[in-house]
Image (cartoon, rainbow, N blue to C red):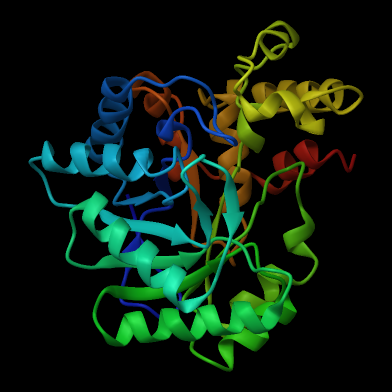
Length: 315
């Protein structure tokens, strides 16, 4: 795969990276039960096929995702991929999730992530979400800058920030990357975020390019109805009517375009996000090796302008 430089960093990343949200297994915002062997096989397959970065977070599975990533990397004989993780979502002894960007909390999270991941430094450390009080967010970002100076993290980025929040953070320390949601059904980032990042040399790694699976081509009404009780998507409006029907119709348009090129609907959905010059890479979550095979073609697939128009429903 070709690689692109991530913002102001010295990291060069492949167009798609392995997303480790689901491999964390059950928790408040989990995807249901997940076997670690399947997760590790998926990570290894992704690396075999050329992906060179993994995106996880301490909160995914309440630490378990990072542990699975570490196990996969211990067993991997090839070149180690970049490891990106996040802070700011924490849990207590009752596994109740809350948000904190206070200095002590971030430092505690960083040390715990370093131990779970088994690395000397985190390649990209990201604030998962800003908090309502931007003073706390700013203090958290200043702590991230200190962690970078101390060598515990190589580069620092953010997730789910607005342009205004990016501007304020950038005044404290350079922002290497932004992680926003972006897909054919979530295009808010096009309003100002993507162009701002492109101007300011902030890398963009988008998440949920297949809209949490509803655009993968594998989702049906029956499958949605039978999602496990502990799968967060059961309560997501995109998986409920009237949006579900609209999204499944869009998945069929993706299927039609993909059929002309031997690509899956998911590969087409991912390629649509990568068509935007501001996007450095897309995070793609898979739960087994077969799913990796079904999306890897997105890294090199290019849509024509007519196909883009067809997918966006502008004609």
